[in-house]
Length: 216
Image (cartoon, rainbow, N blue to C red; front, side, top):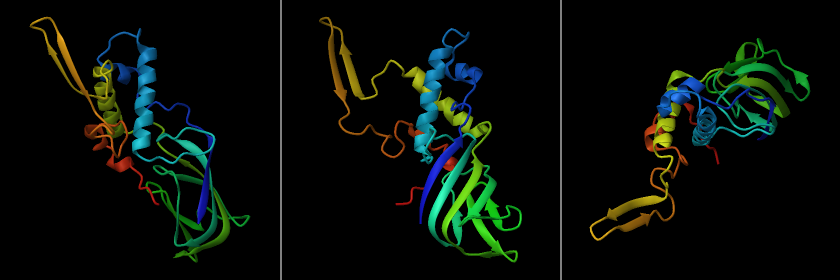
């Protein structure tokens, strides 16, 4: 079975945090740095999205926030359709080889997992079709509290280290006969970034609910 995902209505914003939350995470008062904070907030949101393996759809950037999507499946033979996006899934329409199904009577949905089962006579039955098109909404209208907390922790760490070279392993500054600086840099991947990109381990551990499995 192959599938293709298209974003038909993109999220209005990719930010996981409000301006107030961005300032609180960075420990900044006033609004003079809002543009810089917003740019960093978008980098944090993108890194979290990447760490969670959120599927990329044509026509928009990946996000955990709500979007309307159209997903097409070909050569379907199996018990379930697994949608590429999940969380708060709302089915809008399903067509099977050109014929529309009833969302209320012909399918059963797990809205958190994004799994759609077909019903026949009120009982689960197998999908068997050449082409299935599913239009649905998925994602959060507002980021849940634990996702906001992870984003704020990440923002706080990034802001504190904004002037530090992330590839720097260690630095020794010895003043006595007026200054000697030794620096060592990581070669290859930076520890803690092997599986979750730039997301630090302390943040990655908070994302278990939102992480999607990658099926080879």
